Image (cartoon, rainbow, N blue to C red; front, side, top):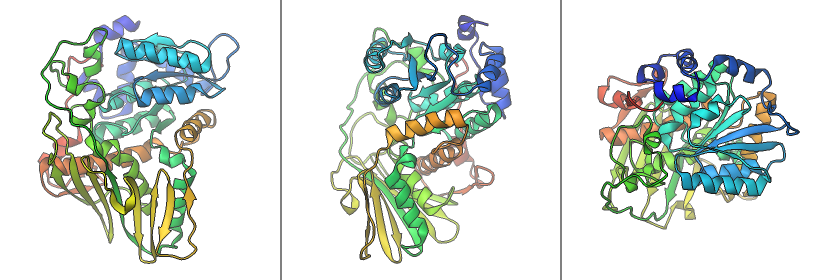
Length: 443
């Protein structure tokens, strides 16, 4: 089938929610992304199949606002990369991104309004997914089944179960998946984690991560006509059908449960990933959350104030805190992670790290994050080695944020069994592990 057939048939909820990546791959194959093409793509990963003299990696960028544009500019700056196509549902965003990419790489990028055309394109080696969170899961699974390697922004998916489906799809199709947890590629974050794990802080029984800054209120806005040039049906995709509202669109989608994960999944996923990494732990056994909308009187759904405690078996605790209406952060830093040991405290943020409570302790200044992280992804396309923020790492760190939000939404402490991936005897909490995909959606 061609792309137009794909548009008409779509992928229904049962097919995407299938129990295995093989089911998802088969579903994709039936509706326009041939598995033969996927197999061909796997034969020579990271090597362009396009005619002409370019022999580097050819990428398609899906979602070209904000972080997506930053990624397009970063990847476009590498000599062995061609950003061959850019894709967005907003014509204005798409046109601006194409112009920016061409100015950087000195060759045009094809403009595409439907991401499935990128998956149909046999000449593309990989796709970058920088859409709102609610599209991460469906797009990443489809891309893996289509034989594309994937760079997907954090959090990995909108739910815990969707994250696991991306893991399954990547394994089943032999795909490299890098998540945008760029601290994993930063040398000063690596050295900080190595110091924590070296034992020089003594036993570390608690890590705290936080984000404290002033965000603007989004106000109250009425539903409105869809802006000209915006494919709103495609933007909604698997999310529930509802009229267009400007407060739920560009950027502000972060603060609505249908599309985003609040500040915990926006900033929190990065710093909680560092906390988990330093402590060398996976998922907690008990999670509690306090907070809510304590400051903003506006349309947002997610909390502007939140403190989450993640209790691990034994004597290890991770604490998250965000305040979106204050300028004074903990330890003199607005967004950071602290490791509290019996022989000292290490604090790390994107500006560097330092140990307190010890004489002559080493420290480190900031290191490059995004460019290094993108380079790591490109190198792994060629070597087929796991990238710095591989899909398993991303699924676990993203799940940590989802667990905190679920505890908030049910309004009490929850017990989680990491072995089963389910809450213990808790029907209400388990309903948030997944979501209903709109049957008539365009996926």
